Image 1 (tube, rainbow, N blue to C red):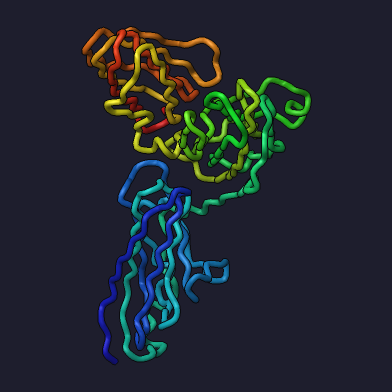
Image 2 (cartoon, helix red, strand yellow; image 1 turned 90 degrees about the vertical axis):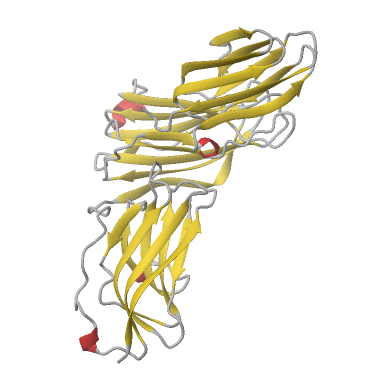
Length: 380
């Protein structure tokens, strides 16, 4: 029987939700004896995608066609598919989730190509091989998914039930907020992740044993307050035995906000705590180049969320004043006057709230400015 060595690679780009799918299939009159699969991504930095492998009818990625999975979808290999025959009309599919939007997912399959149906003796080895290294007997539990948007009025709060997470090491959280009504400013939304020592402590209103409180600006499509930060992504270790998450609309006007979110718990202890808004995944939280601004005008510039050390570069021809306000806080935490024709670089620690820059032209003449705000990639 005529045979050839099999090694085929295909790729796909992660969409805005961090999902990518690649299917590799035999040509007509081919039977593949599969031995190994390999998954990887161009980017090797967080968030690290989860990847599951399926074999069978194309687009039938169900438990009945499941082969193996890994939480190291950026670089891992598995031989659990070894000894499996894939024929024309079937395929081997890799599905990545929780990856980095616009990154590239790469899938390779190895084995032997047969040009006639293989016999039992051709199926070597007779039993499957090794799991992905990233599988590690890991369990992921979907605690809650809210796909139908919940509308929050100003200062309204949505809180999940209390989850018992004593059997888990880490969590993944994703939330997106969008302004759905008339508004007069950028709308801050607060995310509060809370851990309690017991159910009684939660019900009794006790102080949580740990609290992770962050704030982003909600997406909006109405000028002059157009903003598109996308979903906030958080992964971190568990900080207590019981966990709840609340989301609050911190609008200072009558703006309504719709939210949707998901929360997963895992037995894996994540090695890279991570907190970033999708639009700022490259570390650039704000960038504007050669923007004209009139006499005495003030522009408000919201940043994407990105906690950590931050670097700012501001260039102007005229005299400017910049103030920085953290989310829904009333008072600015920083202000600086820029002399005429200046290029100033600064470093500061961004709080766990997205920043609203106010850039004012105080030079007495129309001018231009450029600004870049960048932060380190990781949460810590």
